[in-house]
Length: 197
Ligand SMILES: Cc1cc2nc3c(=O)[nH]c(=O)nc-3n(C[C@H](O)[C@H](O)[C@H](O)COP(=O)(O)O)c2cc1C
Image (cartoon, rainbow, N blue to C red; front, side):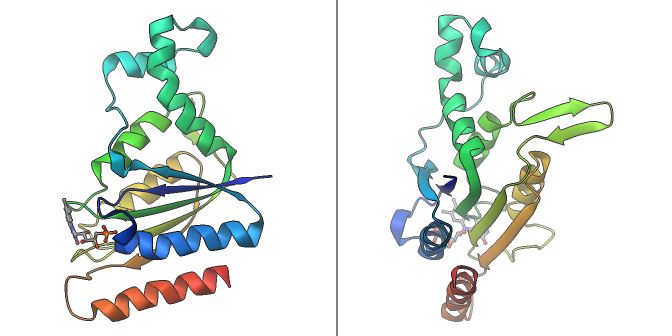
């Protein structure tokens, strides 16, 4: 049976707005499709940042790794296996400083592995994670999702597309530090209800 990978990033944990409707979406979709929900909370900030040694280890085929490289590549191996096993990916995340939280960028730096999740071809890179569906549950204080200066949803959509995940649905409660916050959050929950209904 396929998995649903549920990635969360908010430093506010379960009380965060993105987790509010992200949780409902992830659990609702899993129940609807019969998928097994695999949760990956990045907010603990326990993913390592990429380094030259880790990058080299990640790119070395498993059979050729030194024991030290095997240790360095283990985290990315786990994250990539989670991604490969998922038919659906739900990412619930705030916008931080106009882009993704650093933890989500760290995740991306680990799962982007040439030859495994994408490959280089004569006509450019090709994503190898095709056939998956992604949902982005995004919260922001003032940055409208889709604005020129929203480097979160634009980057994340592009990055997923780079991996071959082009079926991306965005649900946003954006600009919730301004007027009409309650309505915006309610609208995001209503869209989630529609999606899982
Ligand atoms: C470090 C940090 C940076 C932030 N930067 C932005 C930003 O660039 N644009 C924005 O609209 N909101 C920004 N916010 C506000 C959050 O996006 C907003 O509070 C959102 O609701 C947080 O999501 P959560 O409730 O799921 O934690 C920032 C918040 C933090 C903590």
